[in-house]
Image 1 (cartoon, rainbow, N blue to C red):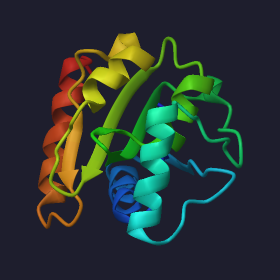
Image 2 (image 1 turned 180 degrees about the vertical axis):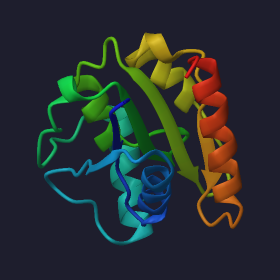
Image 3 (image 1 turned 135 degrees about the horizontal axis):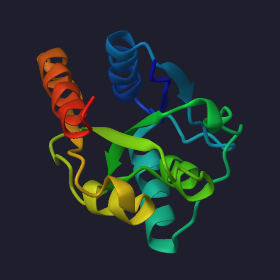
Length: 161
């Protein structure tokens, strides 16, 4: 049986809720990506820090290391869309983690900007996932369960599972 890790970062709780829904549908293990220095609670302060990290290409240190990935076949990654991009704590995870040979799937939550550059960025970090659709869910979307089910069916069909 396929072993799945769901690695996610959530600032507002939207990505966490979607990661938990992915866990319910897949039976995967959850692991929360957390920066060593947490982001401020306020939107403006967090947005400013995220923008600075993007401009300066600053990868924040994580507070813990991921579980041993040898045990997993698939890694599903969840990120908020920050400035049209993968959130910087998730970038740190992608930069520091060898995902070669794994099936890598990605979902994002957003406040109206959709996928942005996230699919392109994922392809740069994980070239083997270039053709895998990225799920983009509006943060407070009441239909996310249906959207999530459809996405999982699509990606597993593409991977022949």
